[in-house]
Image 1 (cartoon, rainbow, N blue to C red):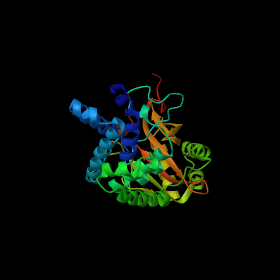
Image 2 (cartoon, rainbow, N blue to C red):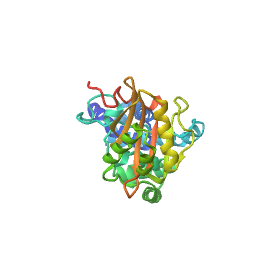
Image 3 (tube, rainbow, N blue to C red):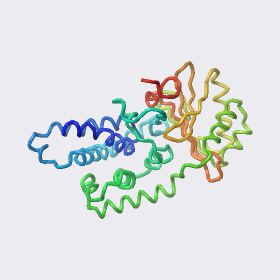
Image 4 (cartoon, helix red, strand yellow):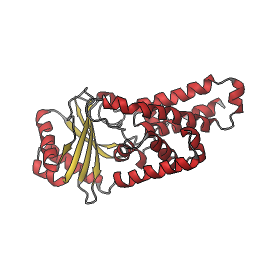
Amino acid sequence: MGGGIVGERRQLINVAYRLLGSLAEAEDAVQEAYARWYALPDPRRDEIANPGAWLTTVTGRVCLDVLGSARARRERYVGAWLPDPLPGRAGRPHGTSGDPADQLVLDESVTMAFLVVLETMTPAERVAFVLHDVFRYPFAEIAGVLDRTPTACKQLAASARRRVRTGAPAPAGGQAETVRRVKEAWEAKDIASLVDLLDPAAVMTADGGGLAGAALRPVEGATRIARYMAGIAEKAPGLELLERPVNGTPGLVARRAGTVLTVAAFGLAADGRVARIWVVRNPEKLRVWAGDGAPSPR
């Protein structure tokens, strides 16, 4: 049973990251679930027919508590709070190390656009939606996590689903080409080309966490964003831009002297122009990124 329990870790990390948007918090939640498992008396553990389901329920409850307290903490956060960006894992099988980022499956449920919409949900909506719609847990099991009836959990998931339909654009085709053109225009400080690539109502949100320079409020409008980006390029000589997958979709990484300073994710409008840019500069959220913006070989 011990090996099976350890083998559940990858699934639990995937659940917890989607619930919390933070790698560190996800790992802490999973560690807490395991600590509670091993704290059970042997006879009680032997009574549990499905340890994986038990661990998922406990992880979900821990995440629910974290989400409840996160709102107050994020009100004290300097500037906007964004989920932790994840590097691509091309060529590396999942689960090859103890690093929680290595355990994560990159799919549509971890794109930055999707995670940002999850942040707008109540904690109960988020738990019901993620467990049911993403991981296909039955509402009868989710009821045990939320301490509500299966019918109430179903209603929570339906409410969350409506938020996703109105708030999270589906990953658009051609994003890699659009991001490449943004990179080229940014490097050239070509404001006119940047404006052409941006939706007129585009919004850029930056997360510096008070630890790195970043706009404290969203920058709105194609022209303002283009000028802001050109200004950054002007003030940052030696900054190198790299095309890299961010949370499974094409994005950009900025590094200087081998250190990743910025990770940018993009959301496209229906016409293929950039509608949203999410910029993470908080160094605590960039630890998982290797020196060149791609995973280092192990």
